[in-house]
Image (cartoon, rainbow, N blue to C red; front, side, top):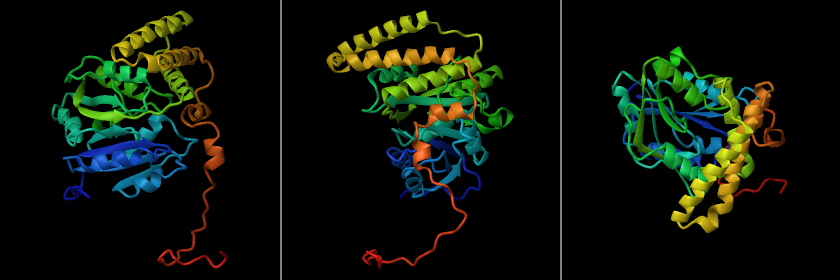
Length: 331
C-alpha cells in the first residue's frame, strides 16, 4: 500500500466524502485516493447511518469517520460537519460513488488555488455502465473536455470539487437546502469576487445505478432547493412538456448517431419524463422544508426503520482471537 505523507502536521488537502450505504463503490474511491501522486492529504468520511459494509471497508484505509444522524442530515450540514473536522486549507469534496480516473487528479484539483483569486475548482465527470443514457448526455454537456480557468458563471458540482477553507469559514454551506448547496455556495463565492475554475483533466467516474423512482426523487428535491435559492423562479406545466419533448428529441438523435436508439429509446423517454415531472412537482411544493423532508429525499423508504439498530451503552465482551476453527459450544 502507498504510504501517505506524515511529515507535515497539516495536510495540504482534506478530502471530505459523504456516504450512506456505499459498500459497492467506496473501496474503489479509497483505492483511487491511495494511488494519487500527491501524498499530503487526509480523508474524512461523513457517514449518515449506513447499514451495509461502508464503514467496515472505509476502516481498512487511513480514514477518519464522522457520524451524522439521519434526523440531522442535510447535504449542507453533512459537508459542514466534515469540513469542521478537516485540517487542510484546500477541501476536496467527492461523492462516495465516484472515483478518480488518473493519479494526478488531486494535484490538478489543488493547482488552481495557487492563484489567490480562485475560490472553487471542479472537475470533469463521466458516467459508468450503470448510468442512464440521458445522464451521460448531461455529463457531456456540463463537463466539457476543455478546461476553463475562469469560467465566468457560478456552476459547480460537489461530486468532484474543491474549495478554499478560509472562504468556507466566512460562509458555510446552507444547511436548509434540499440540494444544490454547491451552486448556492459558488454563487456566493462569485459575488464576493472570487474565480471558479473548471479543470477538465481532473476526471472522475460518477457511477449511478438509480431506479426511476430515485431519478424522480433527485430532480424533485433539486427543484425544491432551486425554489429556495431563487424564490421568484418558475417552472410551469408548459415548461415541463416543452423540456421533455426537446431534451428527449436531442437524446434520441444522439442515440441514433451512437447506434443505440433501439436499446435506449424507452429509457430516454422515461428518464426525461421523470426528470421534468420531478422538477415541476418540486416547484409546486409548498410544504415545510424540515428534517422529515430531507430524510424523505435522501433515504430509501423504510431503510432506517428496518435496519438501524439502537446503540447500546454496554461494551461487548472482548474475546481472545482464535483460529476460527473452533465451534461454538452450543453448535
